[in-house]
Amino acid sequence: MTESPSNSRFCSVGPVTIGEGQPLAIIAGPCTLESLELGLEVGRHCKAVCEAAGLPFIFKASFDKANRSSINSKRGIGIEQGLEHFAAIKQELGVPTTTDIHSPEQAEAIASVVDLIQIPAFLCRQTDLVVASAEACKAHGRGLNIKKGQFLSPGEMGGPVRKATEAGCENLMLTERGTFFGYHRLVNDFIGIADMMELDCSAFSKLGSPPVCFDVTHSTQLPGSGEQTGGRPDRALQLAKAATAIGVHSLFVECHPNPKKAWSDGATQLGFEGFERVISECANIH
Image 1 (cartoon, helix red, strand yellow):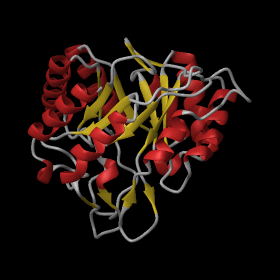
Image 2 (cartoon, rainbow, N blue to C red):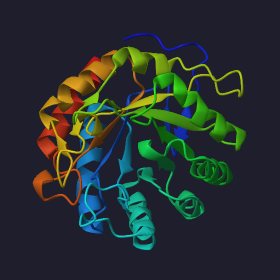
Image 3 (spheres, rainbow, N blue to C red):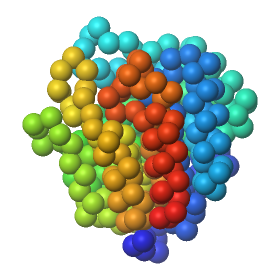
């Protein structure tokens, strides 16, 4: 693996520490928290696979999918029921949790329950959302995960990081999920990912270089390819192995017992066997 810069910082997510020299952290779960039963089923499976590989696990799911290809697509169970389910999953499985938010008003309530707030890629430049999330994370001792916009270069992520740190949160990380150049494809630039791992934020904070996560399954999306986003999940393993080999600190993998019946991202989520293979092979590389 390539070496991360010596000024790398860490992101604490409950008992999990993400960063240079730490075990490869796995953020995984269903795209949408369709029900408590599904969350527990996927969470148990992902936890067992990660424990067998000796890797820390953070449960992820969305209570609302605000960015959908069609107005008729299912959105999710909503924030109130979502918070109840996240609390139950955290207690039942004994693992930290994360979810994405879409408006500043959601930040305080989410930070009171989940361990890591995720800023969606399309919203990473929304100042009010980033600031509200940073303030809520600071107040509750949570972590903040800012996903790189599909329209930004790695170096431009210094902007969202600066907003978050100036709002008081330095417990943060960044996530790469591909860059969109049109034509229904996302491109993963591994030189750019390495550059983002060396992003120097020392000019405006004590943060140094935030840890970087690689979003395996969203990177296989084929955006705008119809009523529902298409995908190439058959390439998830290759992307995950490449990202692990260059030294990313975490992998993000969406997993579902029956992806074709999933409420969202059915074309990119991995089944249980696919998830097991990704984690096993990446653990060996790491």
